[in-house]
Amino acid sequence: MRLIDSHCHLDDRQFDQDREQVIERALHAGVECMLAIGSGDGPPDLEAAIRLAERYPAVWATVGVHPHDAAKANGRTWERMRELLTHPKVLALGEIGLDYHYNFSPPDVQREVFRRQLELAREAGKPVIIHTREAWADTLAILRQYWAESSPPCVMHCFSGGPEQARECLELGFVLSFAGVVTFPKALRVQEAARAAPSDRLLVETDAPYLAPVPHRGRRNEPAYVAHTAARVAELRGEPLEELAEAITANFRRIFRPEP
Image (tube, rainbow, N blue to C red; front, side):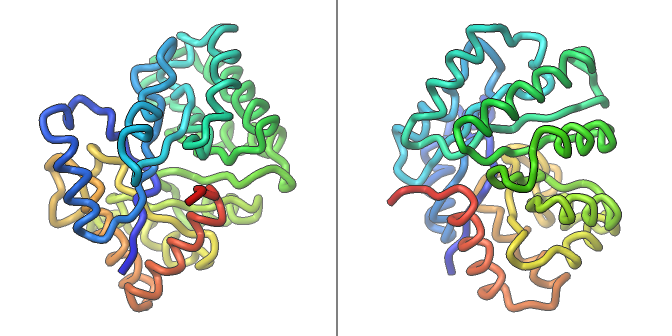
């Protein structure tokens, strides 16, 4: 059975002692591809994921400024990002969006940086990977304005909304990506959204090293554990795991188009 981890932070310091073993365990578990998210510690370094993708064949990369780091962005950030979006192993721009929970960057700065990155992604013809926390209304308003249906795909990373938010995203043509939260017993609204998502608009991810799924909840997450999330989503949908895994793999390849 083939699996793909469509969102992981392999550059995180929690992997510094055993990163190679983590990747090997994922491959042994059937995870044939890992999309490393390139937000890192924020500008000026935009190449955190690219360094890994160049080293490991099964790892692909994104570039992007996380909303937490929006205040660090400047004109040079956009020039460098435009260059890096042409790298052969960079598949998308992300994770980008809005986070009003922590407000590590002012909300108005987050919104401007979000808009700017959507423009760059559209210019480059790259998909976008969206982070939103306590900011659904503003996130969707900006996406409606700057990311028309004719644009490349839009993935709602670590989908944490309920059926209402899922319906809004699906009406806009977006893809829902489910992380370990969907395995948590009390995440009933997220589980309802996972049941409702069409099979061609569905991804799974780890967000490793964060949000480890049951039965590893509370410990460091890693790409091999995406199998637990996929199994829970398949169970919720009443589908064979192998069938769901095939659909998710096909979706990833259609959305991100990794070259052999």
